[in-house]
Amino acid sequence: MSDPVNEPNAGLSENILLQILHKLNKLDKLDLLDEIANGQKEIIQKLDKIDQKLDRQDQKQDRQSAKLDMLVSLSEKLLVQKRRNDLESALNLVKSRKDFSTSDPVLFPFQDPSTVRIDSTKTKSTSLIVEGLSTVGDTSPERPIHGSPSKSFCFPCDKQFYSEQVLKRHEKSPRHLDNIKRRRLDDNSSDTSAGPSTGAGPSTAKSQ
Image (cartoon, rainbow, N blue to C red; front, top):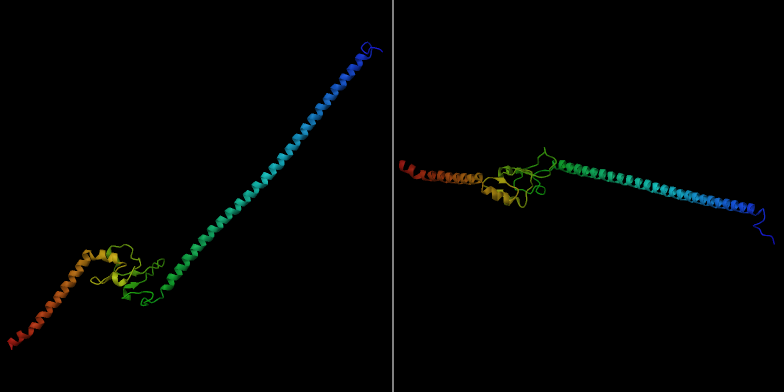
């Protein structure tokens, strides 16, 4: 057998084999780079799809937020309209009460209907105004009467108050005490005036 090392074509064949191996390595590297590039493309495409999904979700959330804002504003408008309707109905009720008679015992359960009136200039309040209530020092003459009106009526002063507590405070006031003294003086004066008239009989008898 011949020795391949000593043959003249042995070196040439080795070079050819090395070139072939080098080309094969290059091809393997190129294939690997192509696979990497393709993998990157797939990853980029998947990321793009995820971004699109997120964008659609954000758009849905934005639309839902806009709908919620619209619902909130609509509910606020409805609430304002409801309050306005309630105020208008209350105002109409007050206006309709102007036609009622103050002598009605159901609407105005007072002993003296002439002491009770409705303030026509202040239609926003449905409370009754009682004459003489400002004499107590109470700055709110539109407060309604609590309890029985007869228990909160001051007979010496001929005034109606809105509660028994206010009447008790009024009974300690100087005006109330002055009225009591004035009533007593009036009673005494009427008694003294009646005394001499009864004694006028004997004096005339003596003159006769």
